[in-house]
Image (tube, rainbow, N blue to C red; front, side, top):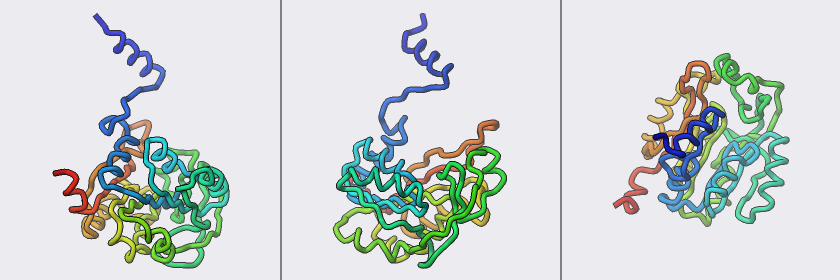
Length: 249
């Protein structure tokens, strides 16, 4: 006899929906919250915040610590400003991109804004996400994380750095050489295939962070080719090696 639960699951799947329990095994947001709690994170640096989607997700999930967001593009920044204003523990840094130097830089603005990048977009990305095609360019201020992070780090004990810069992650890390030793965890996009011209691919990025003293802690799917099912991009979550030992004994 088919159970009511099985019938409900089939009905939802036929409608293109699935329902999961809010636990790390089945929910990416629950997994991130568990990692933040395990590492006793009290400050999240949200680099490439766009409209604040990631920060809103961790707030909704239950993260109660401080957040500092960085976003370079004026339209998402305005929405982010409105959202963050309602949260006393959520600071918005003056509008800028983060990279390896201080100055200015041109950003290619994508149709969906989420895929905007300093780097040229490759055909494979446009093919799987046509809405991400570039519409124009925007010149924005450019800062190193080392140049702007000090004021936020002073009162923090355990800092988590989230980077969502569409292939520009290496340059953000290049501008954070002084800050990285004080970072307890990092979450960033790892591309399994080239999606942006000149980007660092997943294996080199993983090796770099291991050399910086981090261990790969979790992987979450981000971009999947709808016709083939190939995973093109994931989020990698890294914790500093040894930082979690006392909490996992």
